[in-house]
Image 1 (tube, rainbow, N blue to C red):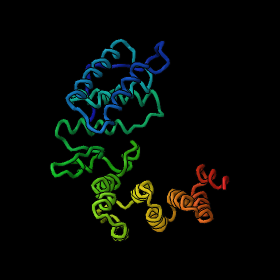
Image 2: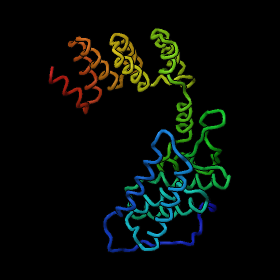
Image 3: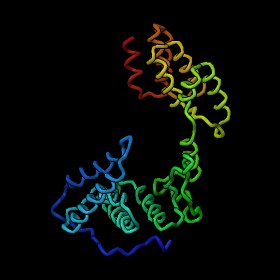
Image 4: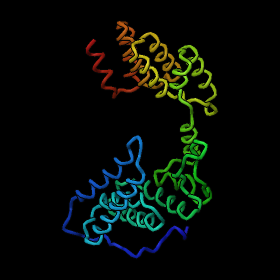
Length: 288
C-alpha cells in the first residue's frame, strides 16, 4: 500500500509542551463540526463555509503549537476530514496518525475512514469499505472498493466491520419501514402478517422487522391509546426475539398499563433474567 503514504509540507513532531489539557477552543470547534451534521436539513452552502473557517483556524493552531494532546489531534483530524479535497484528507491522515501515537485509547476507525475518503477524492477505489452514498435512485450503495487490498483482520484492527457486515448494514439501511406499511394500510392484522412473512425471509426481507423496529411501532400504537393492539405487537416481538431483554421490558410495561400486574411482573422478571443490569426492571419488580 505504498500509495497510501503521503508527503505533507506541514509537519509536526511529538514533543512536550506546557499545555497538558485538551484545547478547549478546539473541543468547541469539534462539537460545532459534529452538531452541524446532526440537524434534519443541512444547509450545505453555509456548512461548507463554516468547515473552511474551522480548518483555517486549526491550521493557525498547528503553527502556534496549540494542538498538543492526542484528543486535540483527533479533533483536528475530524475537522480536516470534512474538507473539500485530497490535500485536506491527507492532512487529516497525518493528524489522526499523530493522535494514535499520543493516545492509545483513541479509536483508529477515523484513520481507515479518512484513507478511504482520500482515495475517493482521487476517484480510486476505497480499501476499508467505510464510505457509502445515496444513488440517484434513492438507494444506499457502497462506494467502489478494492477488496483485495485489505482483509477483514486488518479491518478489525481499525475497528471497521467486515465487508459482509458492511454490506448487510447497507441492506438494512435500504429496508422499508413497517411503520409506514401500518400507517398506509391502517390495519394491525395486515401489519402483523407482514412482519411474520418478512421475518421468515431473513436477509432476503424487504422490510425492517428488527426487534427495535417492532418495538418502536408498538410504542407508537401504545401512545395513541390503543393498549390492546400495542400488546399484540409486544407479544409478537417476544416470540420473534425471545432472547432480547428489551422485548419483555416493553411487554411488561404494556401489561401493567392494562392492569395485568401479575403477567406484567412476570415479563419484567424474564427481562431481568436476560439482562441482570436492567435497572428499570429491578425498580418495577421491587415496587410491586
